[in-house]
Length: 295
Image 1 (tube, rainbow, N blue to C red):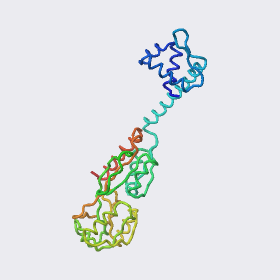
Image 2: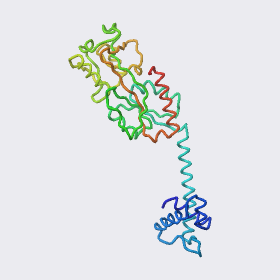
Image 3: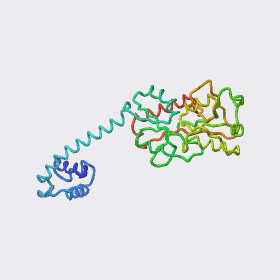
Image 4: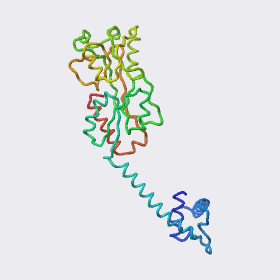
């Protein structure tokens, strides 16, 4: 049964005539009658009857009208509960991020908004959109030349564009150059991410520009582990410019002939942003990403 139809039945019982109900609800008497007829079709017994020229409730109609009061009260209570949930700025908010963003941004984020609930998710680029079913906000990354996130079912909020640099040990002969070319680095051993993850495509582009495939000797997704391998002098790697933890053993240099970078975005379901608490956490994410040196 439609709650609006139940309200009309209740109003008829309280006000005593179709005309009075129509005046109170600012609709026509014909509309009142039509909607009461629709309600009648869902009931096994008559809900109204004629008393002279007036339409009045039967005993069954009065019983249903009394029940309608309870229905309207419950609906009002539910509406208020939803409103309180949407307006509560301190409600818990779940956020997931890939490792380097989590390492850099989760601590200041949790300091700013204590109700945030953080989780790390190491997934391939194509799997980030599916995470919005498990988390309120998903911090995701994709390379500059990668396809955009799927439109329609997602809201995408750009955070930063982060450059990717060639990382090497501080005592590497390459560290003396202010910038590098693909030819400079193509002959070195490399640490790469696993197949299907962001950054791998840039390494392929470096090999293509140099005219030879890179020698991938290690595959490690966690950038902090990669940084340790690079600092030990065993290989080069691509590391992000803003979210790499500073280390005096490392030097980061840009590629002059092959600019590389990634978009870092927040993915969420459109309805999630109706919550005040989620908008508060999103604002805090913007602040901490800007504080990290991004433009």
